[in-house]
Structures are given as C-alpha cells and as structure tokens.
Length: 464
Image 1 (tube, rainbow, N blue to C red):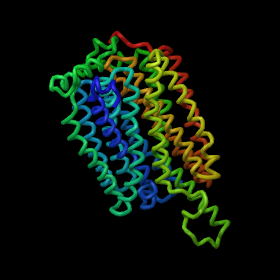
Image 2 (cartoon, rainbow, N blue to C red):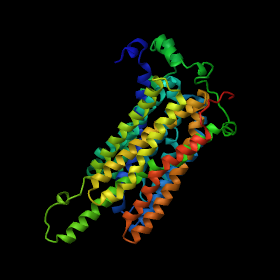
Image 3 (spheres, rainbow, N blue to C red):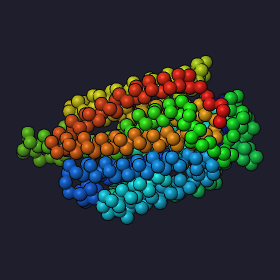
C-alpha cells in the first residue's frame, strides 16, 4: 500500500472492487453462448444446415445487441433518476434471471428471446459502473479505476472457458446458464450491504474525511450533483459535440469487441478442424489423438490466454494517462495521447489469418494484443465522459454511447453472419475471417481521428 493511500484511505477501492465483480459476472453471462456454440450447433439448436447455422447464430447474437441498444436508451436515464445503488441492483437482478432462463430454450427462436432479455437488462452495467467511478474517484484516478473494473470483462472471459464447457459436458448445457445466473444473484447481497454514496459513508464513519476531500478535489466539479436523482434530457445532451464524440467512438469500436467475444471460439475451433483435416489427408495412417497434430491447440485455453493478455491492457490502459497527468500533462492531452497509442496496436491483427496458417498460437497472441489494446482504449473512452460532463449526466451520456456501441455490434454481427455464410458455402471460411479482421484492425485509428476533430481539447460541458 502506498503512503498516499495510507494517509488518505482506501474505501473507494472497495467500491471499485464491487464494480469489478459485477462486470465480471456480466461477462460470465455474455460469454456462455459463444463457448457453447459448437455444442448447441451439434444438438440442432441452430438448424441442420452448416452454412445457415452461421446466419442463425448471428441473428441470435443480434437479438442480444438490439435489446442491449434499446436498453441503453433507457438505462442511463433510469440510473440517473433513481440513483446508482438501486439502479445497479435492479439491473443485475434482471440479467441474472435472464441468464438462467437460457436453460429453458430449445431452438433458435427461444434462444433469441432469452438473449434479448439478457441484453436489455445487461445494458445497466456500464452506465451504473461509470457513474459509480465518477462519484467515488477524482479525475486523475478515474481511467485507472475504470481500467480495473473494466478488466472484469476479461476475467469473465478468462474464467468461463475453464468451467462452462466442463459443466456442459458433465451436467448438460442448460446448467451452464443456470450456474452463471446464480453467481450474479449472490453479488446482490454484497452490493446492497456495502455500497453507498461518499456522503453516506462519511456520516457512517466508513469513509475518512481525508479520503472524502480527495474524492472531491477536482475544482471544476465542486458544484456537481453527486447522486441526487437528477436527470438531463437526451435532447439537451445531443446538442453537444462531446456527446457525439463519445457516440462515434463507441459506434466504431465496440463492434470489434463483440466480434471477438462471440466469434473467437468458433474461429479457433475452425482453425483446429482445418489443420486436423489437412494433416489426416496427408497422413492417412495416423492413429494418434488430435492433440498430437502440429498446430492444433486447446481452443478453450486459447480463449483464456487471449483475455488474460487483454486484462493487462485494461489495467495498463488506465495507468498510462494517470502517469502522464501526474508528470504535468493536461488531462485531455494525456487521455488523447494514450488513446492514439492504443489505436495503433490493433493493426497487428491484419496478420492474424496469415499467421494462423503456420501455427494457431501465433494468431492467438496477435488477437490477444488487439484485445488488450481494445480494453486500454475502452478504459479511456469511458473516462472521457466524466472528463467532459458533470456527474449528474454521466450515466445518461454513457447510455447514449452504449446504445451506439450496441448498434455497431449489430452491424458487425450481421456482416459476420452474411460473410461467413457465404465463405462457408464456398468451403473457404478462413477468407471470411480475413475480411473481418481487416475491419477490426483499422477501426480504432479511424475512431480516434473522428473524436479528435469533434473535440480537439475535450472541453468540459458547463451549462447543464
């Protein structure tokens, strides 16, 4: 523990830990479908035609994203109106029930229904999380705290491949969904017992006066409403370039993360299948196991490796701008400099399909670096909201950006479904992934340019 933390106090990091675990649970629930795609395909959930299965799967993914986009139009204002504690709790209760409901699904339509229910309720996570960080941390620590809680997305993605396939194999795929939903319900007890505003915790003696003063040390936020249930109409928020900068940044980059989340297991599984088929064609007398074939990997472990690398990017993504600010750089310049650096790393994914021809692990490492860059980018783009808006508008603006990010996810899901269906029918699905990786590589630089021209200095909105 640093001397600064000892002097000031550390209760705010307890709050950050709560948000981290909620976000981890959020991604337990999201990841299950992608991990069970091969099993669900084999039992006929997506139909019998292999090419059409890709399209039906993309529609199920889109049902989540459409509902998520709709939920985002409501979640931010809902949380700003009733407060963070109740809003976050209601959201997590809803998505835990929806996650468990997947166990009742029996075909593509019923899966789509429960997926939509999950998307609508999960929309509350990031507006609530972002507002919690804005309430509990000064600007200099927000990107770092956001990076920590946002690393829960990676931890969720790391852990689910380690237990979900095992549960599905031994107990049945239905119980995998029930189990992750139950984990979410258990979080609620800790949230309602521990969370409160800094004012409430100061009065109860849980928060030291020194830490309270540190949390409220930003001079330009002295007059901010903290969590007073106030709201700012969307119509008013949409007139600001700051809102549109966040809107476009999320629209252009969130779809990449959705693509990795829902198609990475299928891509890695497909790479394995092609290597096994090619090897056996050249070695008809081979009698070993598939794991003995050169280049074949355990794809569930590979997914965990990708998101382990991404976790490093999430935490480091918040550390760099903090270091730049502490060295004397103004906040907006530190934020934008860090984001530009992170936007360059995804360009490496242009080599993913080519490298995968030699060894799938090469593709895994490149995609891992790209995911780490996305998480570093994500930690900072979320923080731009609290940099540019007063606390009473943070959840609402986050909801607007979350909605646009979900729309980006819808677009890439539809594109992925159509492209992969086409190339699967041609017997060249790897070519379809190559085209999709091109988009995943270049979109961050394009998004940074758009945001730079909309808000060159990320000026704070003062007239709300």
